[in-house]
Length: 540
Ligand code: C2O
Ligand code: CU
Image 1 (tube, rainbow, N blue to C red):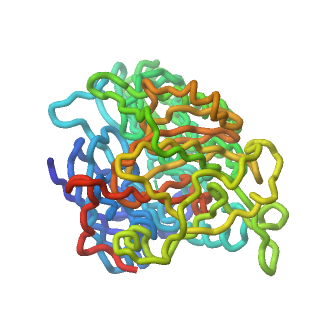
Image 2 (tube, rainbow, N blue to C red):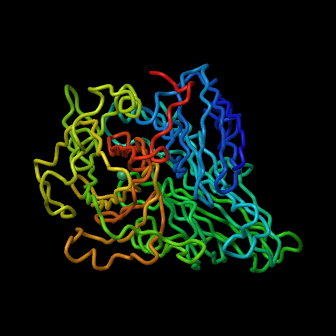
């Protein structure tokens, strides 16, 4: 095992985009933040020093952190925040991840500017399961707000409505030249004709699934969420916040300049039709006009373009990268995902019917505690989390019809956990609902990857749908978009003792309470137990 060391200094740094100057929270002054490079199985130490004057935590998205939830990062689930002028030396424990992941702040809305890529290369003597690319380029999709992002968060939580949308989407921190006053701020990548490039695409956007496409070029998808996939060609990708997609780009078109572009896929609300662009430029004699060609992205409301792309992902499932799908399930969970409303006390709110938006799973709206759930569990502190998170909604109903069962209109607040036995096998069916409005939910689980064994539109049918599960080569993911008014079934083995957050990766939805935590108990024997906390664990 190789040990690698990084230093992350959190600080406020002036940046200008679209002729707007502001100060944003950064790591080491960089936006996007530094890329962490490692090889499969390495141990990475990141010394985080907070000089930003604001609380923060950092999460290693998709890194399973075996037996070591202490450095996982989600505020008030795994840890208390790193207070201003304090440090936390985080241990990032890589195991079988290989490909692209990312890190981001996991405290309030700080991830809007505090994020970067994690590139996990194969072990030194191991090849990629595809021809070696000429070069590798991380492509991080992000956003720019003229306003301060914490102010954006505070405002919508106070007024009860939807958050303001950002002022631009970004590719590697740059909006591209279709926005006003942004000609200088365009990400550019040069390619040589005949060569192949590995693009490591990360969706770090706050609230939107994105379509991404390169003009005139088909790409070959080779991985997602640090797991290799069977190769397939596509002229666009759909990518959820939290998700990563690795793709090969062959520079095989008439030498010239081509746009890469990304735009929102929006199944409901929070509509934004602006397009961010970057430029791919062939080196040498360019025969095409100097204005790049713009790709035609799928329509903004094209649910099938998103759903069908995601359904094409399949595990490699060969001798080198076999699948290990749980076949006998110990714990079957059925979790409804809902956007709800609550009356406003005193004045009126900006949600539908002048009420306040909130969100729930199985009718429970997550309330984050004021000390971390992990800390409470480890130290036997009572009163921090309540009774078991329900395995099912209070009663079945027609989830996807625009019919509103009044009993489920108003979820209850709670800080509840579901305890799982060590090494037990778990199936979760996520069921989207249409209570206030139907929308996709990119669900993310910490501490584990899961196999996506099935998905569909409409209501899950527990007698029929499991017959069509893919148990041969389901994709191994950490974030999966549950389609609007549809369902997704995942399976995993609870083999990582600790406390692990599971939540929607739309930031406004988790702010509204769409999350819960699993406690995976210790198993027998020293290698099946959580490791002790580090001495510099932040305190509340
Ligand atoms: Cu990418 Cu809980 O986060
Ligand atoms: Cu959601």
